[in-house]
Amino acid sequence: MNAESDERRPDRKAATNGDEAGAGGDGTKAEPALGSRAPHFIKRSRTLHLSWQVGVFVVGLAVVVAGIIMLPLPGPGWLVIFGGMAIWATEFVWAQLVLRWTKRKVTAAAQRAMDPAVRRRNIILTTIGLVIIAVLVGVYLSKYGMTMPWHAHR
Image 1 (spheres, rainbow, N blue to C red):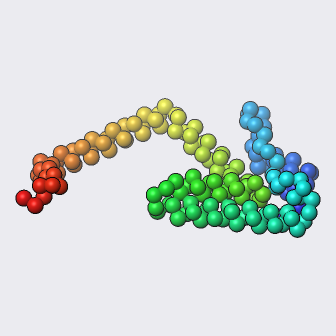
Image 2 (cartoon, rainbow, N blue to C red):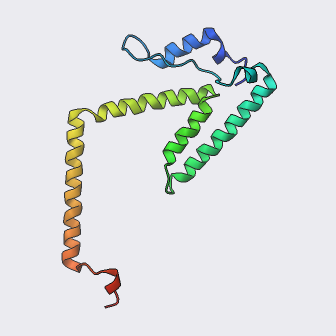
Image 3 (cartoon, rainbow, N blue to C red):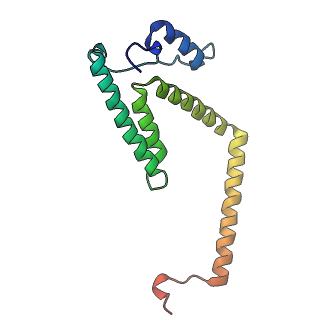
C-alpha cells in the first residue's frame, strides 16, 4: 500500500469500517480506522514511507516464519504467528482485516465455550477420557507390572 491508497482516504474509511466492523446498535465498540500507523514524518516522504513498509513487512515476516517453525517444535507457534500479523497490521490494511476477522471468530468461540450446556458437555467428555486412560493404565500395570528403570536389567 502506498500513502495515496484508497484505504487511507477518509471517505473510504467510514464505508470500510461500517461494512467490516459490525459495530452498530448492539453495544460493540467501533473498530479503529484502517491504514498505516507510521509516524507522520515518515508518511510525508514517499520514499521513507515505502522503506518503512518494507521494514515492517520483513520484521513481520521473520516473526511469522519463526511462529511457523514453532508449530511442530516446542514453543508458542500460533501466538508468535499472531504477533507477526499484529506487526503487519501496524502498516497493512489486509493484515488489519485478517486480525479483525480472527478477533471476531475467537470472541465467538469464547462465547460458545462459556455456554453452560457446552461447558457441561466438555466436562463430561473430559471425565470419560480420564476414566478410559485410568482403565488402560490399570490394565497395563496389572498385566506387565511397574518396573523401575534402575531395575530394568533384572
